[in-house]
Image 1 (cartoon, rainbow, N blue to C red):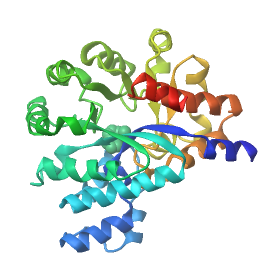
Image 2: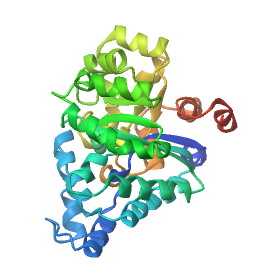
Image 3: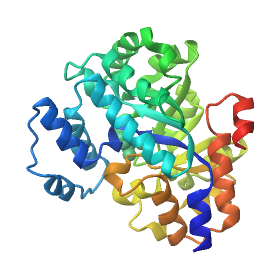
Length: 322
Ligand code: ES4
Ligand code: ZN
């Protein structure tokens, strides 16, 4: 009980949050009405009842449907401002937010509308917030290149590049050339790997894409040499416990491997992924994890410390948080 208060109150950084995944059903319906968008669900309750996922794809289908209500810059602002308010309440002091431009440009929304709305909300928040532009891996590398080109006029508004969406069958190496270009341009690089996909995808994310952190990465423990490498090279994993249970990566939280990752010497962090869909924001993830696993005060401190050490912040700004 005391530990619960400690994990809730400790200052922390969030390194894995999809802003479109913070869109709550109530806001989806409010924006649908504001923009005259027709939804396939009749009510907030009906939509929420559809949040019973069996795997990543069953979630993504509903997640992209939810994002279809986002049309105007103010919509992106309102969504981001709502997330940042929840993050502040959970004592998140710094957050690195993914956004999926292709989910919106494919519907005719200009990329400027997307980036300006999200970025303006970040500037208006007391929480330190930066942005990671994420490519959809179920689309082609050519599509990713076109998106990068459209986004480059606004490059001062995001500092990183990520890779998300349907993992299995879309390995990191599919995006080798566009990530090489992003690296030349000086962006920080991350990729989702080893969530549903095999440990080999974690290796190619590191060796081919040259990413600095792995999003999820929980399947690394299936490969002892890879586990040792991640520990030795101090490659952070942005783990999302509630997400992993909701998407059936682990059947129950008691089976989650977060403690094994920490015990292996890996720089693991706790994050919310898509909090509106998976049952909670940062503190809900910490509380669920600490209730299910034999984690103590030293693990809490370690996770908080890891979150800042793995952040893409200048050393002097990191020191302030550590
Ligand atoms: C995602 Cl949990 C997850 N995995 C892959 N892509 C995503 N996009 C939003 N959430
Ligand atoms: Zn994710």
